[in-house]
Amino acid sequence: MNKPLFSARINLTMKKKLLPLFSIVLIISGAAIIFGSVQKTVTLVVNEESYPLTTYALTVGGMLEQYGIPLKAEDSLSPSAQHWLREGETVRLEQAAHFLVMADGESETILTAARKPANILSLTETPLYPGDRIFVDGKPVPPDVPIPYQASHSLQVRRATPLTLFVAGEQELSFTSVASTLAQALWDEHIFLYSSDYLTPAPSTPLTGKPLQVNLTRSQELTIHVWDETIHTLSAASNIGTALAETGLALQGLDYSIPDENSPLPEDGEIQVVRVQEKIILEQVPIPFGVSFQAADTVELDSQAILAGGEYGVQARRIRVRYENGEEVSREMEKEWMAKEPQPRVVGYGTNINVRSVDTPSGTMQYWRKVTAYATSYKPGDAGVNNTTASGATLKKGVIAVIRSWYWYMQGQRVYIPGYGIATIEDIGGGVAGQHWVDLGYSKEDYVPWHQNVTVYFLTPIPAPENIMWVLE
Image 1 (spheres, rainbow, N blue to C red):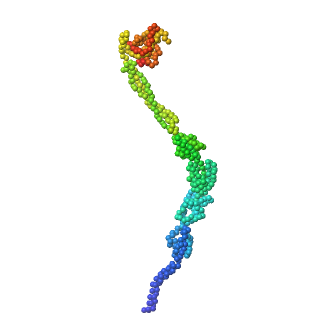
Image 2: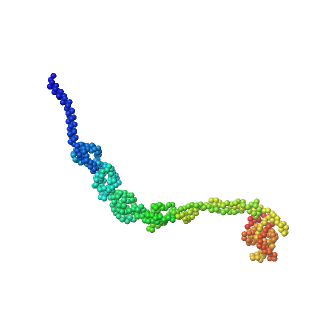
Image 3: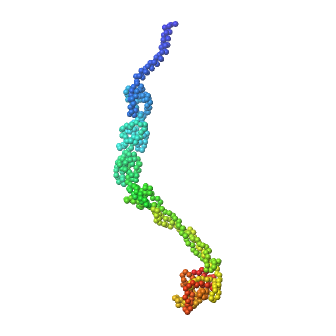
């Protein structure tokens, strides 16, 4: 066996086994030397705030990763993430923020690391015109001044709006404004509005940059009289009706105003409101019933009995009553009708004749009717009296006169009058108002004056029914 060759082989084998181990040691030693040689101090500026850092990272990106600082594509990093770091170097990171950009009635949200408003607007292709103003989070900012970082902002462009103000139809002022609303624009110009002023367009109208004509009607003082109440208010309404409605005194139904509701506001400011009410009432007016007579054979002659009591009728009326400010001013009957017909009272006059007897100086006499009457006497030669009666008989004792209605039934009938005697109805006289009457006839030679009540007995025989006056007048 060749020992040198064997030894050489052993040495070669040992070298092959030791070579990898030696390489690892060299790598570790080299890494340690490199690691120790790249530790460095740098300044990291994030959103304008500086942080001194010690890092062993070789690149800017490695340093950010070492400190857990995420990097978005929209962020602005200088130098770039691939840049090899050097001792004492400054790294600037501007983190992207969300911006809600609002202009011309439109809105857009972008994510950008830009800080100047003008640059941000250029990203959304939003132009700026002379007089426009920029508001960030509601506060005005110049277009070229950077915005401090925060995660999100609102950025609004308010266009300069030309305004022409007319007061009471006459031009008062022309100006431009970047206010968001018309009310704010007027306020900025020290044009103050009262709640009762009338402005067109409305105070809340947004300003968009387009020229705007504004009409302002200043309110005036009004004194409104309603019943016994007086109300003072201000109004710029175009007419009285609108002014009353604004004040909560709108006309309703039949209400009216003085002047009329369609009239413009009066110069003296005096308005009277008349509240009108109408009521419908129903009236019932009693209608008296009449009286009718009919023969009643169960009732004695010259007596009466009520056969039916009678009922009042009802006349109904519908009446419209008008009240102004609580006082009645008119009544109008709209309709009248008979709600109930009256029912007449029926009186039965007696037709039952009973023959009775009366004692007289000449003996007992039979009579079928007895009437109390006021007796007077007359003779030929009295005023308007001659010797002949209405029937043609000669005027003398035993001839009497009655009123005309009696005469037509009783002419020729015999009667007995105590103190006078038996007589025949032959003449017509004027009568005495309110009572039955007979006029006792005499000749001039035997005349006796009479002025007293007497009983007149109608002697039998009983006349035919058609010659009987059943109801004496």
